[in-house]
Image (cartoon, rainbow, N blue to C red; front, side, top):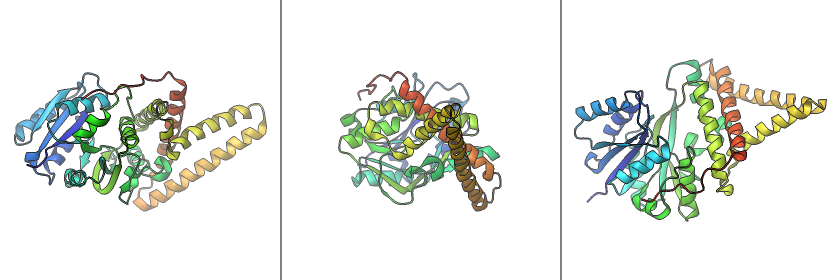
Length: 338
């Protein structure tokens, strides 16, 4: 008998995108009889549950169940989904993602061929809205100058990596290394994959495994997201110092360096000149990338929108990580048992 796949979807107030995800799952090439969908809802206050119920009523052949996530955070949602899952293979998706038609089938094939312990793919990052800032944020979220060497954002070659988002893995992996750490309110995927690698496992990224990911709509949402990423990355680094990558270290080093130069420049002018010089070079690099993107995509607003979005990502990630390093650590082990 064909092993069953359980798709686990953390969800809270996703009325805009949850139907798109469910429609994409209905369109998967993977056999529907071997598939179940588990939506772990963080007690949504919008019409998310009504949208799900309506979809269930019109698609009775789709095995879909909703479980409560009373803690209202992503790792708790994933764990709730894992506990409710009946499948031998587990695959995580987000409520604001839209997997391509072969997504589940390709993950399934890679796992059944034992290519790696965790399998994932590449995001096709798109704007949630057709506004200049939403388009600029989407462009920045997929650009190496803004996000570094994160292969799941712009990778083109299959290979072993340090992490993937929305990973797929066999249920026995969770039994071996434990569930998601519920004390980390972000970076939960990276922490899980770090434990996989420490246990001798491998993470495989295949660019043919693709899904649309909707970037944040405005700078306020983007700033909050990247501050949170940085802050909780710092909490993780307190447990796994060796997990820091260059792309993750550069923003806090830049923020710290600029803060030091500006402060010192108040007392000695050469430091102020160094601060101005660094700021000019940084702005020029972002502006050049923005102009290039604007020409490539034939969207003039990217010339100033991209630098704005990229700078927001850099400074909020960097400041969040620095704040996290000096804050009190989260509890050292929030991993649940299966």
